[in-house]
Image 1 (cartoon, one colour):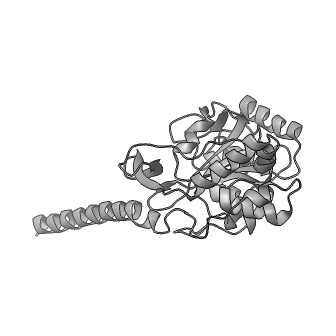
Image 2 (cartoon, helix red, strand yellow; image 1 turned 90 degrees about the vertical axis):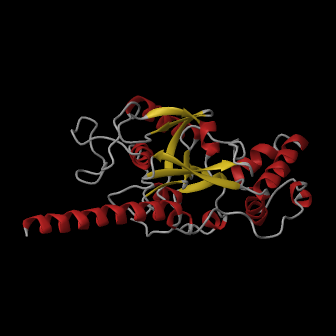
Length: 299
């Protein structure tokens, strides 16, 4: 009888393990991708008449964002360069409407994976160059997913070529090339509204002085004071918390739902931020400050 009981327990345990494996595989392969990634389904419009205007109106900037993924600051930066800048804007329009191919690649086996850009044949490729990021800006991607939850990734821009990131359990926060974000299926460069370049530079400097080389802690901000002291035994970072912590030090709360967990999505829809440049996102997310379609509710 005891032997039969052990066989039954072993069989049940095996079924549970198999079911768990099937659930993980299904969630990562299907659930995490059920909403896909944004590709414009509307008409690609002629932008020449708008770009020829000396002064652009609010509706002109909205049109340009829907057509190119460029926000007001990026458009102004390029328009100030004359005809060469106008041609760059038109090039970004071509890239924004171009066919994209996405491949799901392992980050931590099947448990955490990233959706990256590829050619039709599966060769790695890059999203459009990031052109207008400045110190203190935030970069968000929703291309990373675990167990079917598309939680994404976030980083703090510390200079025009570098971001400060807290990427994965077991690694300390470190700097990365801003160009590395172009491998993802989408990205958005965001800027705190009404913050001067000097204020944004202070945030970037603070990030490098205090938040560089800090251990990763998945529970950052949950089981203790949300803005824990750096001397606390509970202090650690995860990607969105790093960005939030840097800006809250200067009195700016970027956590849109003000919960204990700060996620890239919380940053993405914060009304304290404006879009600089985006790719692979629906522009309406930023024009209407709506929540991107997700396969799971916000935490």
